[in-house]
Image (tube, rainbow over all chains, first blue to last red):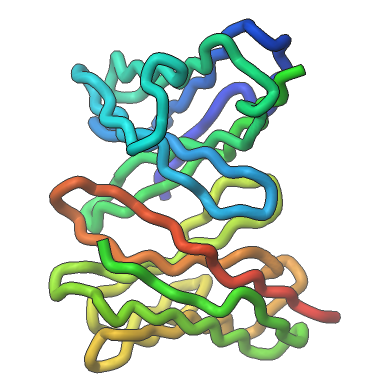
Length: 115
Length: 111
């Protein structure tokens, strides 16, 4: 099946700095990717839809200036958490649509810890 | 998007079939039912999906009721590695493409 890969798997950053998470579709082109965040013992919450060559669509309550999304190519979307704070510590997951059935496949996730 | 409801948790004995129910009573005619599972600290893993016919693959079987208001995911011979949170999602492959996750069912397979 399709493979979606994220990097880094985990990252620790200092409060006030920015951190970038990459999401790649390894064996297919993805015009649309999705970003989720997940807090411990909670379900996934959709943050934004990333569209290749255009601006991302953010869900209500998600600050677009804080969570910068760039989808510059058909195989790469990036999420940059700007001016990170400890409350931004979370598990961030991306996904992409693939196949004739338009199935969504997820990356392995990226753990962000802000200290 | 249609809302799905699932029991918060279930236990299953190792080697037995695990039957995970999902209610999607407001599903529309062109929405599929998708199942994923998430093992601790990993991204969700695709299991199976269907529209109205029952489906089977190497991982599981999906039984969808005739009125499509509910479905059951069946893991025929559960193993300890099947312990995970299972999510049922109803979604149509057009429009906004938004996948909305519910709370899922935490399946614990017991030795």
